[in-house]
Image (cartoon, rainbow, N blue to C red; front, top):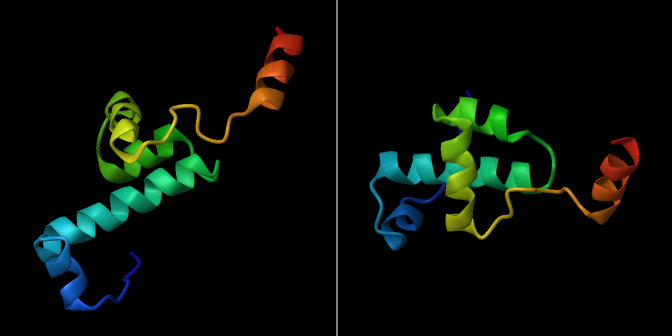
Length: 82
């Protein structure tokens, strides 16, 4: 478990309860880690306690591609290896 300190007014500014704010922080950090290619969608989903499909669908809320850090070079490599 990792504890992060934050001022109470931050949750209030977002109009979230403490529990909802903690969930948002956890979710948004995992979405960002996925976007950066640091964790897989499966790992992120497991940590959040949801299915991989639900996690991938949730990415739209954060304007994050389901392909994460996957770029044209990765696509070309996959095509070459097919």
